[in-house]
Length: 114
Picture 1 (cartoon, rainbow, N blue to C red):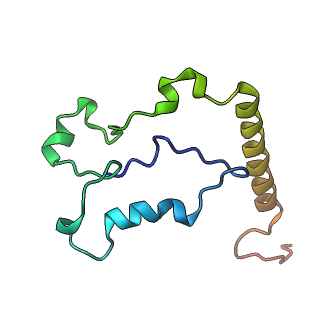
Picture 2: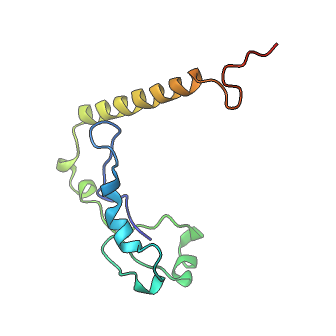
Picture 3: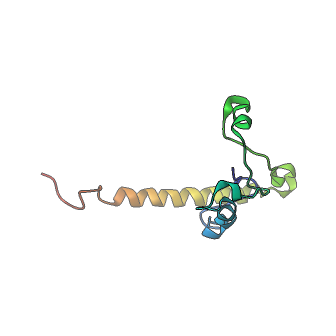
């Protein structure tokens, strides 16, 4: 498991997710190599079947890192900044939906049907 949630904050405009943000995951995961060469880090650790099945309600919503921003209320972003980020994300999503709605349906590319 790789915990990419704790301490990460991405937005569509001010701090978008970029390829380099995933470099640590790729380094830990070691694609194309045997699992035995993977090295546990602060964010990347293995869980056995027995550990997973022993969890309450047997789910994969696993967290072991503590988010420092949630422990210190003084470090939270001000409400107006959070609200502005939400507005920006919603506007970007609305723009994407509008572009999809305006494009011709797949396979029909501008052909008029009678």
